Length: 319
Figure (cartoon, rainbow, N blue to C red):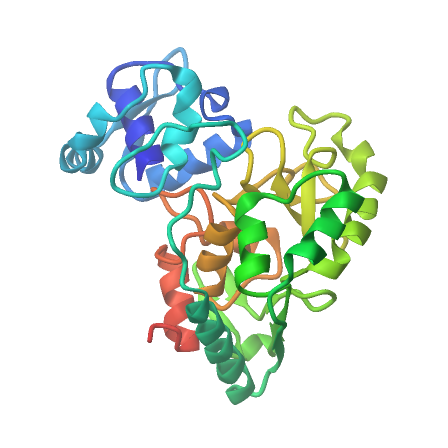
């Protein structure tokens, strides 16, 4: 919501609009603008020199409806990336670089269990394959041992889930394509991760060695995310899901072996990402499918987006 408000406001005020303002990659802003155009908030004006953006009537109505956000807009542009990512009613400026993206709402972990069980039952009922296991929480000592091997502390949001919910959640599902869930991006016939599950504290050190072996993929990238992320999941095809430890600290990033989808941001934090993904049954095996669950107001996976609602209806996850 704040991201869309900021973009529309800058267009109306004839202010510059570029990816560096928001600490994202150029294609991420470009894709966000495409979504805003598709949803009728912005239109492209053809000019003799170059194309420009203009806010539509729908976009101006959005600005009017959320004009209270104008008072929140940071004067310091360095704070803008944190403001557009903030979730909640009253914005609180970041108190420190370490916790800026880990100030979370209170997530109800029992709801995660419920949604995972519903997805499992739905897929099995459709004749598909699925597996689900949720281990007990990790102990403080177990986490300290991992942190000692990694030589840094785990992100606050991830650490909280390990301590209060589960040290390891294994979940995947797959189904014949003709029985898959339909979205505007096509049919989704799988979700979760088959090899090592959604996360596993016992695999973090092994994943970190894998990350080190792939740091060369950062060579031509603006943000060196392979070198500065904590890997918590592998998708079974060589790509990884990680937590940004340097740039937009705490955000969930996609780490592939090609440049097209490098650094796609999937969640504000570990808890936020998992809450949104689990609410849609961890649907999506490929980055294109995951990106399809973002919305005009939220540049991450959003379980309230149009495609997400379609998935939830088909998998029976609304209750």
